[in-house]
Length: 73
Image (cartoon, rainbow, N blue to C red; front, top):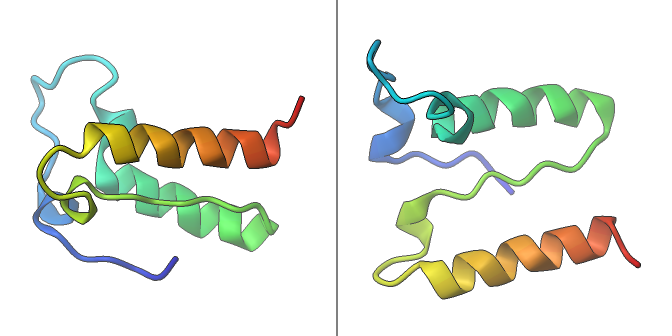
């Protein structure tokens, strides 16, 4: 997937963010993808803006498909 831009990629994580919030921040996703691409490891970054309204069903289908592809039975 190519680079994406969106409002969340420019937002800075506040100092009082809840533990674990950084791991789900888009900036971390792009940082991780850059590193994994150099290692030849597939990494997909998906932004909530890509899903529109009720993103939950499609988001979970996408995650399940990714895990099934790389962690088959």
